[in-house]
Image 1: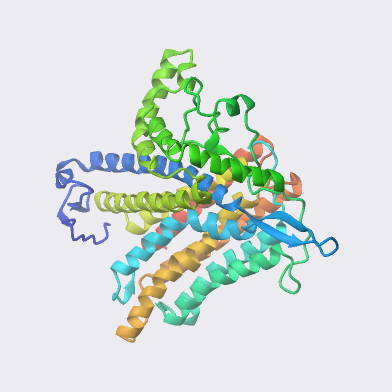
Image 2 (image 1 turned 90 degrees about the vertical axis):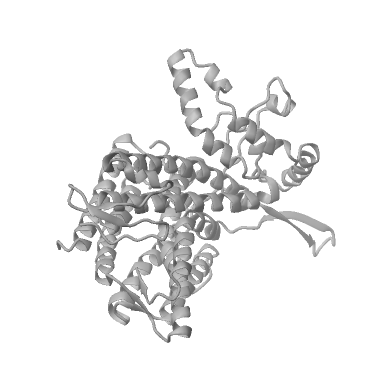
Length: 502
């Protein structure tokens, strides 16, 4: 059964086709799409969806690199030695790592859901209804337990306000309390990281690295010829795992205070010499199809395949070249631009999934559980993968997923609900009514149970392998199959529920 579908741009259902659902006359770009066969249209839309996933992977890598520069920012602190009255200069980190994981990493990768939900709330304002390898372990179990608590509590809270407190409606105060709990999460995580008495768990923390991401050792040969034309390294903005990742764009802030000061001088020298050269290199790289690595391939077939793949990626590479180099302004400009691009692609994903639901006749909720959720959660997957590869501990990789769940509820749902409930309260003195609240509550219960199954695996790995990530390859495959099984259980049960079968 196809759900009702209406769009102001001319999208609507028309005549019933032989499949059994009404013919979809909605289109993505051109009205001529409706003249194509439904099977071919579905194939094209899924192909576009896959291409968007590739773009999300690319820009998320860019986002992570910009965030890395933001987090490693240090500030100069001048103190007076009480015994000698001499000035003591030291450099301290601006960002607390636990807060960075929650407010930058988890919030950033959840930004597609947050921005799209907020846009939808504004558009519908006034509506009374809301439609494997190295072992890596968590260094700070205490902070992770705090994050885990608030993640589980987010779903418990959602169930309470939907089924217990005010069934099927959301009041202004419920929406406000939902948003405020994100602030409580940040404060509690910070208190645990600092081991504040009475507000933190008495759990010891193992030694963690000084840097959020470990520094890379620059190549001496490259330093001698940074901008040399003969050995010029082309910056690869699509993959941060380039073998040429020790160039000027990949410069790390050293750990020591003296090195940090010299790094600041080096930064200003770079800025004076080539303010726009790095940005130019990004466009040159985006238009370069045959790199040095490609020319080194012995097989002509591999070279053709590599060039063909670069040609497919060229539009994304050229588009993302407009993101400023991430060492400008400590990475903040690139960070903001990356979020905007992520949200833009996620918006395209939502439009594609809407049309797919219309063309195939699949229930819109089922599409939301599968294709739409995969698209908007893709940055979470990519960012956690990069964090697992780049960092020496598993804290950020796991905290990103754990905190993304709570951020999606406290902010991604809370802010749109706050906008709608505030408008309805002041304009109509009415709450926001939730359609199919029973189906949503059922999905919350299923998700809660599967989440416990996921946490059980992490605990088991900690007890057996002494680490949450890495280990024997057989563990990776078993964990993968188990997690996929949990996801299939969630999708199947939720789909059967919204379809009225159970």
